[in-house]
Length: 86
Ligand SMILES: [Zn+2]
Image (cartoon, rainbow, N blue to C red; front, side, top):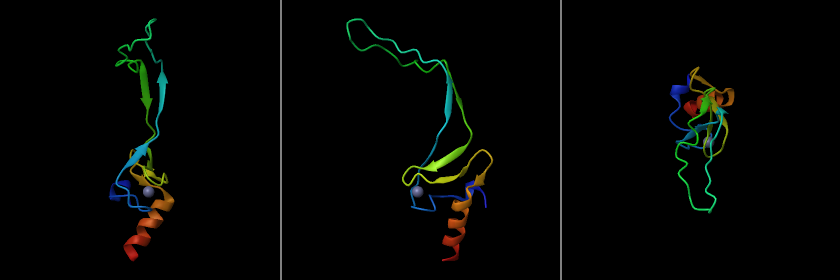
């Protein structure tokens, strides 16, 4: 089985997952001397996101697999097989 076989989290049924990525670079956060709000819409422009493809369930936070290599986590695959047998 591959990651694309997942239609929801096999542990809790949640339909969303998240990827925890690393970023590198610099953040430029502008501040006014008088404390008023300043435009910081481009504060992350000097950063690069480093994706490893590992994703986790948004609800139960269990590891699900890797969408880049299209592989399932070992426990996620076991759970998916168990669900198909029931
Ligand atoms: Zn879950």
